[in-house]
Image (cartoon, rainbow, N blue to C red; front, side, top):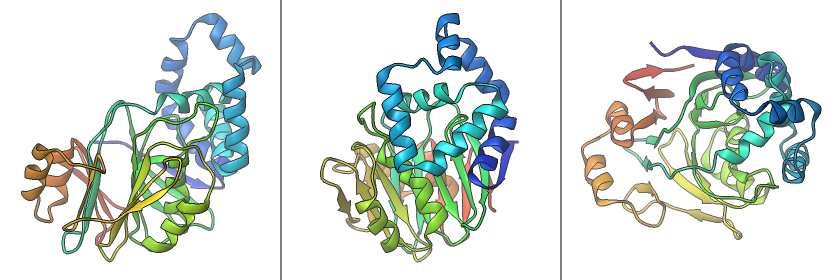
Length: 273
């Protein structure tokens, strides 16, 4: 059975709740750094790129910067190290797909270590998500109003907070597709990667965070990652999903969401708020 991290309250409280559960995994990762690197992180003596990234995070995503402080305090690791870990997440491409109405399914593959998380931010929409142990923003999730979002991988400037962190804003603030797209078009963040979005109506779109941001609409009711061309193998496996959220999660090797029921499926288990 997959354990769920329950997070509730103000941004720093959300981080503390996550850090309290993820402390063992994060401490083990931090311990693998050299003694000198650990001391430098505790003293805040990080390299110039990491300092610029932290400033960019506070400027563009202050709630997530707050969450990382709470996360680090509860997990017993320095916040400076957690900020620098953001630069390690531009990783391998993973498959992702949105299947519009009548299916109303969205999902992405998962690589590396992750957690299942329920977030209940103060005064904002609650959501069920898959996230990294030491990152405030999720990889994929759905909120209580049926808006689902998934991060698409990409490379970005190591000194600028990446725009894909907007995934958390989308889940916390919006209940339908178009306002979330408008938000993603104008909010700050470094180029690279994108977001795949779908609302409870089954309508989907993607935002590509290149130098000029672009909104991509489905063709024949489907959006695939990579956005410009889906693989033939993925195309054929999606044809067999037919509205089955578990089948989509298996085809992508990760997590999938049924927006109508606000259900997230991963590793054969289904989770809701």
